[in-house]
Amino acid sequence: MKREIKKVAKMVDEITTFFLEFQAQEVKVNIFTYKDRIVITASAKKLKKSEKAVRRLKQYLSYPRAHEMEEYYWALTGESECEEGLAIVGTMVDEASIDYDDEHIDIHLTRLIGKR
Image 1: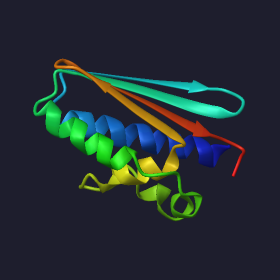
Image 2: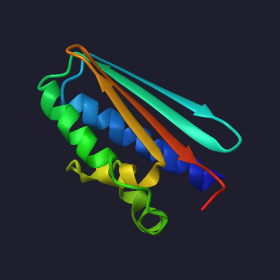
Image 3: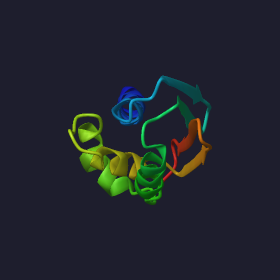
Image 4: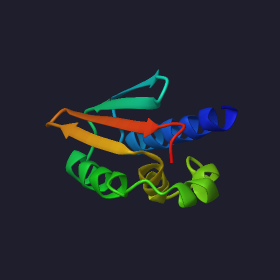
């Protein structure tokens, strides 16, 4: 379970860093732990270049979950100086959705646990 906790922490780090790089005025992150899944919600307010941020989020978080890649690369998440860490996050979640308007970006990530 400790490994699972570290993976979730790395994903949160990557998302938070991404929002801060786009100079968000406010970032909120919630983690909900259930028996069969972990849900991460993140929201950012008033990002600079929000259209570019949304494009990149859609690109990186649209990758399908890849257990094999996750086992090999998860430790690199949150450590990179480039945005490819978000691609690793994309391969670590089963569902990702992005909602946005002119002022806010909201991300909802679901990671199933205990199943392969």
